[in-house]
Length: 188
Image (tube, rainbow, N blue to C red; front, top):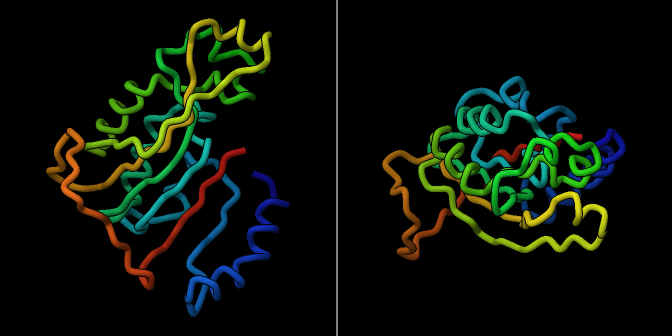
């Protein structure tokens, strides 16, 4: 994320506010590391936190999930996509600057992510979508060996007494348009 990207986002806030029927904007764009989330938002102050390929780039993924859990209101949700691996990534891959830049080096084994999410308080991490990432570059393919990578979209809820297994009873979450505050935290 750059200052220019935030300027583009700011440019369209009024149009989006009108399009979605709000009287005033309900978004805030912040240029900072996601690890600093609690410096910008108070405890239990957000309904939704979204992220796209951010957590993968951070060193301490556990602290990020803890901070997101803290700023979410009860019933709040984190909805995000990132790159995950089908097994644990070796240190040589994790530290390689090219693979980090390709978002492969920071990929967590998806089962480890689910353990971390549960430890932070998100009882039942749910996969919304999972797409295989095809690596076409022979050099990178050789570097990662047999590890397979996926783009996975997760939903995490701040709910007490949620079963730790996904059962679908047809329930849905409905957020009231007038009370939703959305925070976008982007890490360069």
